[in-house]
Amino acid sequence: MYKQFKRPAKQFATALFAAGMLGSAQHAAAEDLLDLYKLALQNDAVYLAAAEQYEAAKLNLPLAKSNFKPFVSAAGNLGRIRSDITGPNLTTDNNRISLDFDWPLYDRVNSIGIDQAELEVENARIQFEIAHDDLTLRLAESFFSLLGFQDGREVARRQRIAIKRQLDLATERLDVGLGTRTDLFDARARFQQADSDVITADIEINNALQALIEIINVTPETIAKLSDDAPLEFPEPNALSPWVDYAKINNLQVVAAGTDLMVARQEIDRQRAVRMPTLNLGASQRYSDTDISTGDNSSTSVGVFLNLPLYLGGTINLRTKQAGLQYNAFEQALDLAKRRAVSDTTVAFRAITSGISRVNALAEAVIAGENALQAKEEGFTAGLTTNIDVLDAQRDLTISSTDYLRAKYNFILSLLDLEQAVGDLGEEDILRINEWLTE
Image 1 (cartoon, rainbow, N blue to C red):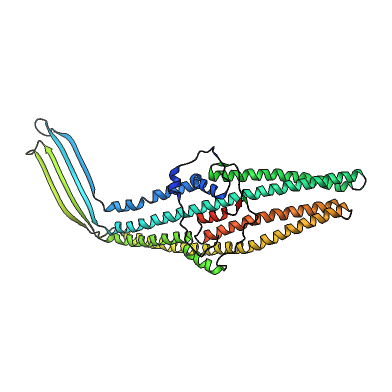
Image 2 (image 1 turned 45 degrees about the vertical axis):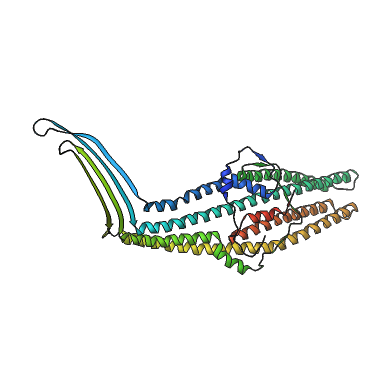
């Protein structure tokens, strides 16, 4: 998972998006995280909407450049004029046609607009990367949440079996006069609670599965499990400071905020450039046909036109000041993005390091719980412990087992959180985690 800082070659939706949506009622044998990831790229509505927005944003640059391309327009009218001011009524033809050509040669405002458009397209690409990272995290969270609930159900099922065995023993002991009704009632109550836990686990699994289907738009037939020998890896480098320094530069939200700031800086220049002259090449052709004069009349004109704004009611100063205030706001947004990047990186890094310790501690707790349960069961058989002692040991083992499994999933999610915080989350992370899964 960890590597010396890199910029991943992310695979975006160009090819997958072109493949189109899969049917909403499809089923797929998507057994591992990579299969689900590929389905999500094709079917997640949030990601596909981001892809459309990116494609739309890419048109901003050719739109900005079109301001320096020639404009050609034509106009005309066909009509008759009727005049009856004095004398007999007079009706004449009134036909006119005009053709105008205008080619901007110099316009500082539009030139800056092209520079802004380039940055806006780049920002749209970054936003698309952010949407890709968001999809990756949502999928991983949904996937491991489903695994966690499946593990919880298995633990609850085993707990119910064990409590049922204790309930049967309590019944038998009471029948032969060795047990108490208190032991029987307590075992019966705990069995009913265990039965309820299994039902609750089934509901949680169904809810988690629906959340996954909402992303991939496909019902998976099976879900791969996390291998018992999945590694617990420390970050490399195993120090917080380098990760924080990298996040300040490469976190996608920071990069996007920096791009917004550059656009705002250019907006100040663009508003100031309104007072600069513009230069256009213009040509026109006019043709008219009336009965009043000598007949047809046509004219042609070609020239270079200079326009110099002298006074625009004070709007230039006001809009420049407004752009400056917006620039200050984007500076604050960039500073906030850096702070959040530092915070997210710190939280994720510490979650990884503490998560390894937690997983190891809970693994020991499971082993200790198993030994304690065995000892309590042997003591119960020998008459040294009560049925309640055995049930308590089973409950403690259930809690430790469930916490252990979910701690492993949370550790993996922390790995992805750290990659996202430093702007390095990519498909290779999915591939690495996928190697830790087993059928």
